Image (cartoon, rainbow, N blue to C red; front, side, top):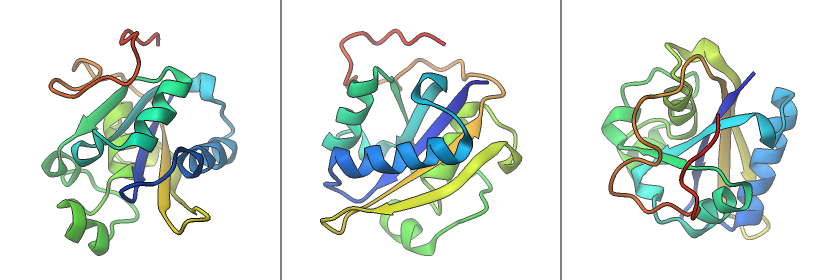
Length: 154
């Protein structure tokens, strides 16, 4: 089964904290990095060094969704704090569901999994079962690709 990761983080979160959140979420879901078919976040994170480095390390193409699109997704763990900072009540869960092509939150294998790094910065990872892969290009237009080979295999 292929899965989609939805990632969120504080500005400046190191790659190690993001990698820990992803590793723990994958273990909880019973999957490995090889099962990842899609990775997504919010457009506000399109230049986040830790997120870009993590994707590059795994050869994952990133998809970025605008806050308004993420806000249309019903998730089990909306956050008013996240809404105040980003304009959407969910980044990770909503991004995972959109990237997975899922119709609803029942596709979530791991809901909002939070990790706090040694430096106090937070990362979240959500995992969704892929029901269909989006037809939109990977990555989203107008965003740099952290991987020199932007042709992911699914």
